[in-house]
Image (cartoon, rainbow, N blue to C red):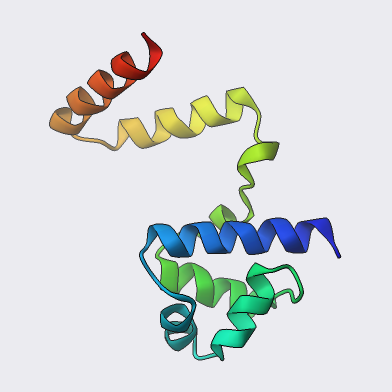
Length: 106
């Protein structure tokens, strides 16, 4: 089995679950059979570029996020991504995030 198919499938599943969607719910949004979603998430099948675009739209993410495999990211890339998100965050949430970081790192 192709390693990238497995990584993509796991990433799709991870994002789908964070959006609190079942395979059936995602399948309905992108107009495919739920078995197809299962085959992709298990690394058996791989989606077309058109399907990747549909997944991204249904999950409300940029398509490249589907290819961001956490175990392959470098520390610098993670910090850059976090900083980009923090720049878009309002002051109240920044304060909460700062407290969470303090609690985690201490």
